[in-house]
Image (cartoon, rainbow, N blue to C red; front, side, top):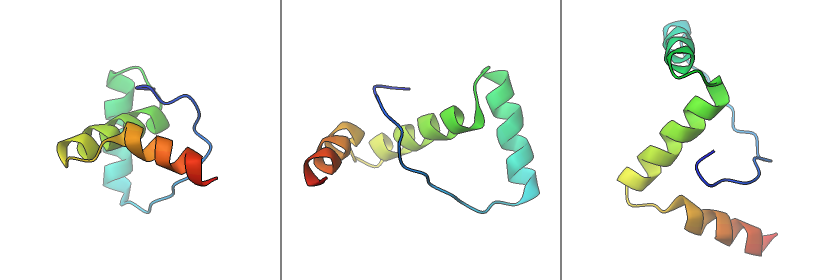
Length: 64
């Protein structure tokens, strides 16, 4: 899971059926689950946008 040790937060989105089907195809091609595929894509996008996910995880842990 790209350095994440615990996934305890649920994020839900609404998406058109075509996006769901594309997600399933892409996840199947990588032999992974929908959740892992989305998690990886989200981490990649955060890094591309200059947000370091490790920093956010550390900040979250301190605020609990």
